[in-house]
Image (cartoon, rainbow, N blue to C red; front, top):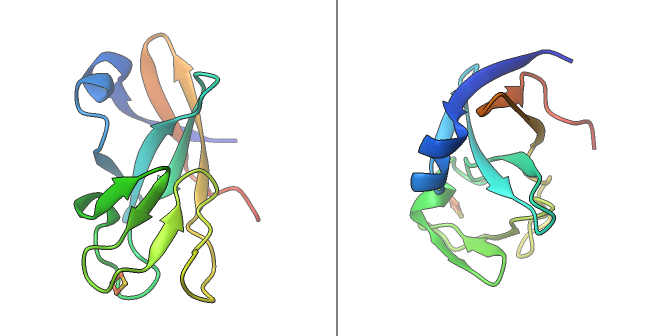
Length: 106
Ligand code: FES
């Protein structure tokens, strides 16, 4: 698996709701309850709005444009029959967050 470095852990923690560009796709990095990290596509599957500009409540993000809702842990679309948001493996290496260049196959 190939990864690209996107941020220091310290800079990400100071601004956790931020997306990073991974070969033209916007990917947010989120932390699970166990402290591990994962990446999730942040462009809405409907018309591509930036989901990080939407509202987040109870682990669900609501798109700012037409209110499609997604589970932030699984990427599942909760309001429409849409494919899930792409998931990316994230590793921490020497205080650097690295995102896999290819999404996890679902
Ligand atoms: S762009 Fe997200 S619901 Fe339309």
